[in-house]
Length: 125
Image 1 (spheres, rainbow, N blue to C red):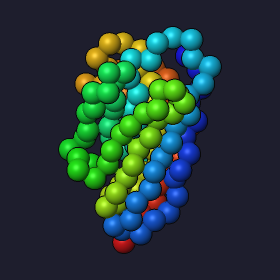
Image 2: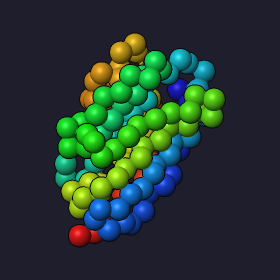
Image 3: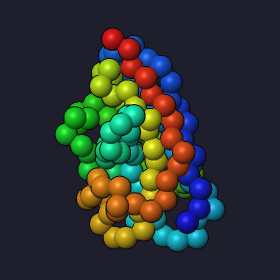
């Protein structure tokens, strides 16, 4: 199902911005959707945002109005623009790909079958 490689994580102060990128390669199947998830130690992985091949997006409530997911199909790259960052946004962020129609409507790990290794985002107060 190919390889997903995230980049763009780092440390930022509360109120700051970061843009995450996810480069996809080697996939020979149709990706119906892409998504960002995040996870902190001891907690389950949670969905952040997803985008379908038709551009339809879904956002988790805590990030609505602050984060924007987008994709460059020609470059096989997924982005997550994060603004007005809060300390509670601190987590390891993962890129994921889904291969079933409508998977962008579900921010559940079970709907996605390809994962990157993650990039760490730290927001200080």
